[in-house]
Image (cartoon, rainbow, N blue to C red):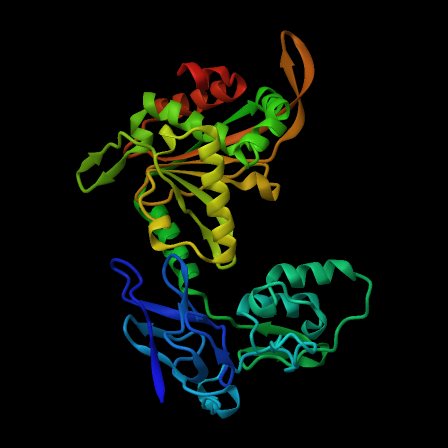
Length: 408
C-alpha cells in the first residue's frame, strides 16, 4: 500500500516550491512525521514530514525541480526497508560530483548521495574526502561547517582523490581544471530579483558616520556576566543599536515608513528585519515590536532567529512585515559598505567591524574602538537632512547609552 506525499500549503501567495534536498532515500525506513524532503520557497526552506510510518518509495520529483502546492512528490510504502523498490534512475539525484561511498558502520547514512548542492561544492573546492568526515547534521549528514572544519584541520595533507566531474560541469584539458554549473536556489533567485528591484525602483543613497564604541563596550563588559546569569542570553551590540534606531525613528518617522503607490505609510511601531546568514543565502527575519522590547528581549529574539536561520527552520511569518533593517556586516570583518534597501522598506542601517583608530578628543590624539555606520535610504521619501539627523542620533545614543534610558 502506498501513501502519497504532497507539497504542503506554504503560506499566503506561495504557490510552488523547489525540491532542495531529499532527506530520505528509496528503501530507507521512515517514521511518522519524520522529515523526508526539504523544499525551498522564495523566502524559506521547509521540511516535509512523512504522513505515515513506512519505507521511502518513489521520488516523483528530482532535486532542483519545481512542484506546485498539493502536487505529489513521493510515496511512502508500507512494510520494511528491504521490501521497498528503488526509485527510477531518471528521478534520482545523479549530480553527486564525488564517488558514492557508504558512511562508517553504524551511521546508516550515505555521506555522498545525501549531500546538499552547497556541501558538494565545498567538497570540490577544498578537495576533501566526504567519506572520512563525521557529519554533524540530521542523521549524521554532512554540513558546510563539517567540510570547512575538515579542510582547515589538515591543510598540509595530501589532497583527496580527484572527484569525477558532475554531469553539469565541464573539464578543461588535462590540467584538471573544472567548471561546475549549479542551479540557483529559489531563495537565491528571489534575493537577486528583490535586490535588483530595489536598485531600479528606489532613489537609493547612502550616508556615513562613525561611532566611538567605548561606552557601549564598557557597559557590556561591566554587566556581561550578571546579564547572562539573569536572562540566559548574552548582552550583545545589536540590542543597543536596535534601541538607538527606535529612539531615532521616533524623531525621524520617515525612516520607518514606506511608499505605497502615491501614498506614504507611517508606522507607529518598529519591526526590525535583522539580516542573518543562512545556508541558502542572506535572510532577514523580523523582531516585532522592537521599540517596546527590553534589551534582554531583543537579544533573545535575535539569538532565536539566528539559530533557526542556520537550522533552516524559519517560517514565512518570521520573514514578513519588517519596517526597517539592520545589517551587521562587521561580523564578517567588513570595514564599510553600502547596504541595499529591503523593499518595501525605505532604509537600512549597516554596521561594520570595530577597530582601534586614532581620533582627536579634547585636542589630543587618542586611540578609540571605532565603527563605521552606513544608512542607505530611499531619497524619494527621506531627505538628506533627515537621513543625516537619523544617523547622528544613533551615533550620539551609542556614544552615550544613558540617552537610551531617558529618551533623549
